[in-house]
Length: 176
Image 1 (tube, rainbow, N blue to C red):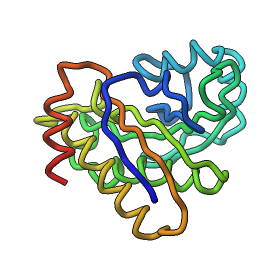
Image 2: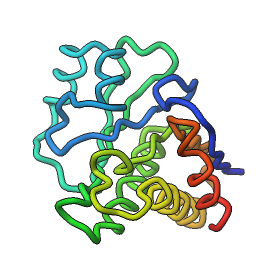
Image 3: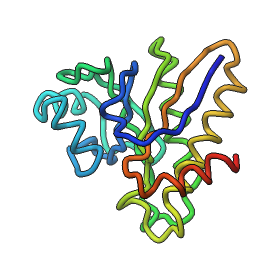
């Protein structure tokens, strides 16, 4: 049976089959969770792995690389979340980033995944509550995946990095 759980913590530190990088369309090292993943994996090695893909990727796309020097996971799934300051109504693309990550997980025979709140930081743009928006789209993508793949069990950790964002995330999580 598939599960989804909301936690306070860094997706980078979870013991799962794959952690998700809130990636940019060029799969280049960035800030936030992306920077933390590149630092832990090894900047040059992870960039070389990412360079195997033809970029730019589209918003909502997800691709996989080995985790390299990250010992608590086997793989990094790079999910391109939309930048809501550029595309203010990109909710479907945010949902796609989560859903496509779950598809990549399944296509690689993996069963556990840790997500950061994609597009909730600088890519949150002018959203009234980027944390709640990201949580809602993750849960909807998870529910759709579980419905479409009832015989493939996955365990999802949705990671809220800061305690101050947790009440908003929890409220959005409980509404779904």
